[in-house]
Image (cartoon, rainbow, N blue to C red; front, side):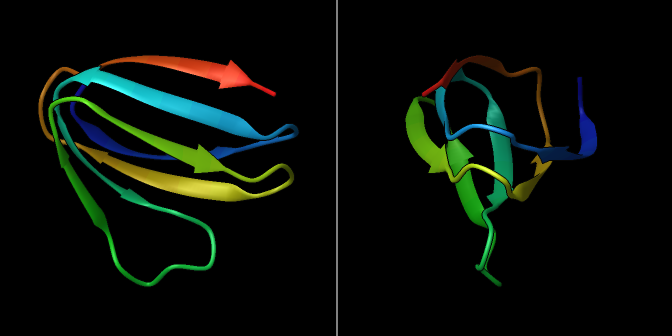
Length: 64
């Protein structure tokens, strides 16, 4: 759903975006990464990241 979200991780996560339009702020970054369509990004264990969802987004999250 469109909106702004913050998530915490216990384990390393691999986020595979299948479709949608969003921005992600990864740990240690000051720049929002713009995603429009398929993309992959990783989030380290024990950290937080932020998402700004602009359209309905399909994703697969793998914990490694």
